[in-house]
Structures are given as C-alpha cells and as structure tokens.
Image (cartoon, rainbow, N blue to C red; front, side):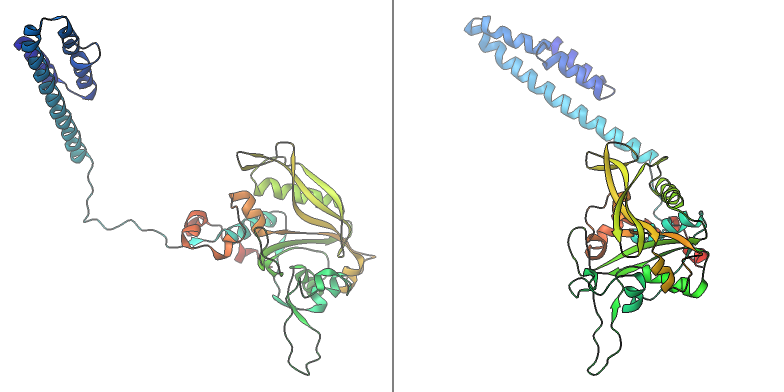
Length: 357
C-alpha cells in the first residue's frame, strides 16, 4: 500500500499541466484506475481482511483527491502568474482617442443614397417642410377629392379666425421640391430630393414623420428604359449585390403616367433578407414618367420635355439593409439602440455638402 501511495503521489506532483494531471487521476481513481480496481476486490475478501484493507484504501483515495486538488490549484496559479508576467497594462498611459457620438442610421443611409446618385449625375435639392396646398397637391395633379387631401391623412396648419389664405400642410412627400426646382432652374435637370415628410399614421411600418427621397430626371428623350437602368444601378450599389433583378408592375399615381411599382428579387433565410437571389419579390418604391400636367404646372413645356420620377422611403431601405425590425425604433428608442445600430462618426461619408446643387 505504501508503494502504491508513493507512486501515485509522485505522478500527481510531477504533472506539468492539466492534461497530465487528468491522466494521473484516471490512472488511479478512474473506473479502471488502479485504486478503483483494488476497491472492487473488497467484496471478495474475508470480513477480517476487508476490515483492514477498506479503511486503508478509502484513506488513500481521499489523500489522492486532496493531492489532485492541490496540484490543480498550483497549476492554475502558475498559469495566472505567467499571464500576469506577459500580459500587462500601463494604467499611467493616456487613453486612446475615441470619437464621441454616432451617426443616426437615417443620416447614414441618406449620405449613402446621395453618394450613389451623385455618381449618376444627380444633384441634391431641398425645400420647405411646411408647404402650400398648391405645391403639395395641385401642382402634382392631385384632385380635390384625392384621399391624401383628407385631414385623417394629412397634417393641416391651423389658420386664425378671418384668415382666408389657402391652407398650408406639413408636406406629405418631397415631390413639391421637384416643382420648386423645375420652376427655379428649368429643364434639363437631374436631382434627388431627400427629406422629412409627414402623414397621419403610426404602426410598425408607418410613423407620423419619416424620411423620403425622390428622384427626377427631365430631358428631351428620357424613357422608362432610362428609369429602369438608374434604379437597377442604385439597388446594386446600395445593397452591394451585382445584377439585382427588378420587376415593374403597372400602378397609378396622379403625378406620373405611366406609373409602376418596383419590386426587387429577394429571399428570406433565417429571418435575414437576401437581395438579388431567391424566388421572392419585395416592393421598394413607386415610379413612372412625369405627367404632362405636372410639367406644365412647373412651367415646363410637356411637348418639348419629358422625364421620369421615383420615390422611396429612406427609413424603409435602411431597415432592409441593416436588419432593423421596427420603423418606430428610429424615433423613440433609447441610446442603447443607437449605439447598436449607429455608425461611427469618423466612418460616415461626407458627401451631402459637396453634392448640394
């Protein structure tokens, strides 16, 4: 028994690492370990032999377990000491500089959109967020009975008693910017108009205030083929996928004729959107050829000029690209949300100032 004890205590003391120590444990106390096998032999002994050998084997087992625990602690302490020797931090050094704050996803995507369209020759135009009824509706060929002109859909500005001026609204789209820019600059023209817009709606995919970008291209011989090319180039650049397939479905908008809803090919896998592949289609924007009455309202001769227009939600395409599940989170989430989805201030493109036309 003394020889067995000395042998295993020596092996445990000599174990250089956790793997060697585990090997010693299994050799002595495992199911087929030497001490375990000897304890199984107790049942074959006479009562007198068992009374003498049993306590001795139990004492040996306890001693080996204590030696294993002590050696395991010693190896852990040695590993920690080595880490402390090789891994250290000078707390007296000045902290690394770190940019404060983040870019909001809507701002980031607006910059991305402006940069992509700039490569195709589009400038950026802006206009007021409080618009006259004429710019927001009449100039865009929206009749008086159109549903968007109802107070349940549009925010109207209150007038004082006796004020009979035409009503003003919080703009429901950035299309008035197109009219104002055409009046100021005339044709030909290529612009996008990003900005805030307002509608009376609030759920997972709608908010009273959201962001939209509209595009306008006017020239003498522009066609739907040009529109299709521009949109496909944009989708490929924005979603970073080559050859995004589009589908145009006939639709109706008062300000375009013909009009089309535009879908992109996609698939959903494990809750993640994959653009450019699969058997599904996702509607992303509305578009069409600018209605002659809209051109005429802006002072452009529709017999000489024609062009296309399109509009899409910036918040919506931001949700699609960056996997943001709820539109309301753009406006009522706390700072932890922004830290998760925000973009580092030094990494954001700074195209807007240079692109403004």
